[in-house]
Length: 108
Image 1 (tube, rainbow, N blue to C red):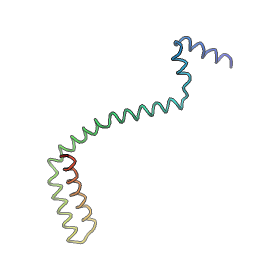
Image 2: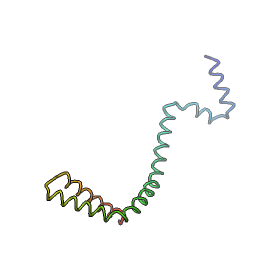
Image 3: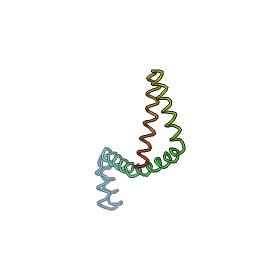
Image 4: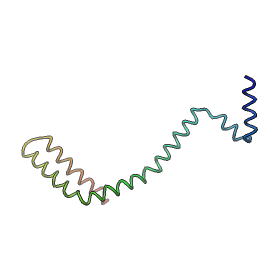
């Protein structure tokens, strides 16, 4: 295909020299890898911003519902221990633990 090579060489001259030669030397696999790396970098840059927004939203609701969830979890834990129902004990312990960990995370 001699015409195809002539067309590529002509396009290189039209576009403007070295940058076109570099662009033509990249394979599709290399372009995909570059796009994946740029995407990962963008996620790493955006993630703290989204995390901060999420913490603000959760913290606003935690002040209202934290005490109620703690006492509901404590009641469920006590009921589970008294009735010897492991499922209720685990649910109550998880609720109490989630509130305690949330308070620690929010304040420190």
